[in-house]
Length: 168
Image (tube, rainbow, N blue to C red):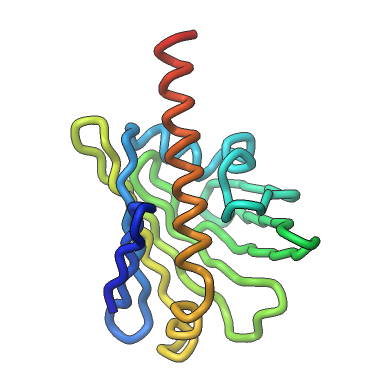
């Protein structure tokens, strides 16, 4: 399965039997993208699909450190994700577990790799699920739309941060 998301710059590919790979390139250096992935004050400005906002954002980006996001969306909908960081290598790599509240299917292992070339950073996120059935259920969910919209918000934030640094 390969599904480039038109207009959002996100590419989502099912890989092997349990992996889902999301790829997006940002017009920003890796250190800035890494900061936006790990600093609560930046995460609150972009994380989630349009209409959603982080109401709880706890991040301890070190091996063994915990993270927890609670997002609120339309009509009061709520989504909670949490996990532990296994590997943190600024500004190039994060590995963490991810578990959705009220989801009995187990945690995913999520690896994020940032590869910078000429001031542009390609982010490759690989989520490994416990089974192909869980991965396929995620593929059928609105995850791709939500991730695409969130990454569009991230791209806009990165452009704003770069502009602010060039024109203080």
